[in-house]
Amino acid sequence: MNSLLKLIFPAVGVGLLTFTWSVAIHGSGGVAAFFGVGGAALAYNLFRLAGLTAFTLVSFQVLTGPYMSFWEKLYGPGFYRFHAYEGLVALLFALLHPTLLYTNLFASGTGILQFTAGYPFTYYFGPIALLIMILTVSTAASAVLLRRQFFQKRWHLIHLANYLVFLLVFFHSLTIGTDVSPATSALRPLWWFYFLGMIAGLAYRRIYLPLKVKPATGVMAPPS
Image (cartoon, rainbow, N blue to C red; front, side, top):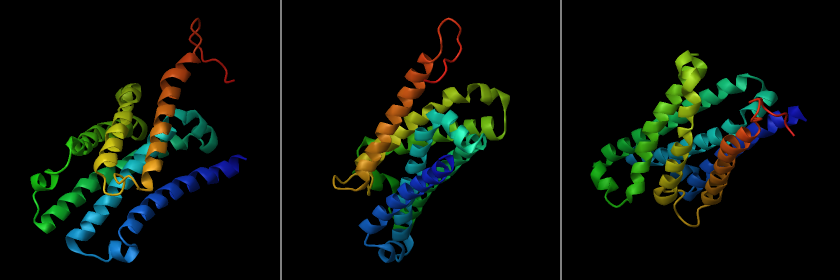
C-alpha cells in the first residue's frame, strides 16, 4: 500500500501542474500559438506560466506542510528537505514571473504605470507576496538546508507567513490573472480546491494538533 501511495502522490502533483499549464496553453490557441510567437508576446505567455507554476507550488507547500509527520512516515525524513527545496523552486518561479513581465513591457515599449493603470489594488498583492515569500523561503532554507540553529528554533513561526503568501496570490490571480480571473476558467475550481485545502491544513495545524496535547503533562496523546 505504501509503495502505491509513494507513486500516487507525485503523479497527482505532476498531473495538477500539467493540467494547469494545459489550460493556459489551450486558452491561447494551443502549443503552436502559445510558443510560436516571439519577443514581447512570448515573454508574456511565459510570464503567465511562471505565475501559475509559482502558485501551484505554493499550494503544494501549504497542503503538505501541516501533515509533515505523515509524509516523513511515507517517504522518510528526506521529505523534510524536499519540502524546503520545493519552496526554493516556487520562489524561483515567483521571481521569474515579474522578470518576464518587465521583459514583455520593455520589448513592447510599455511602462509599468501604463500597464497597471486599469488593474484593481489586488495587483499589488503579487509584489507583497513575493517579498514575504523571500523571507519565508530564506528562513526555511537557513533552518532546514543550512541547519542554522537560530532559524531552526524560529522558522516554524515565520513559516506560517506562507499562508499569507497563499492568500495574497490566490486573490491576486483570481481577480486579475489572465488564466484564472474569467468566470468560465477551468482553473477556478482547482484554485478553490487549493483554498479549502489550505483552510483544512491550517485548522489541523493550529486547532487539532494543539488539542492532542494533554494539558496535565504536555505530552502528545497517542493518535486515535
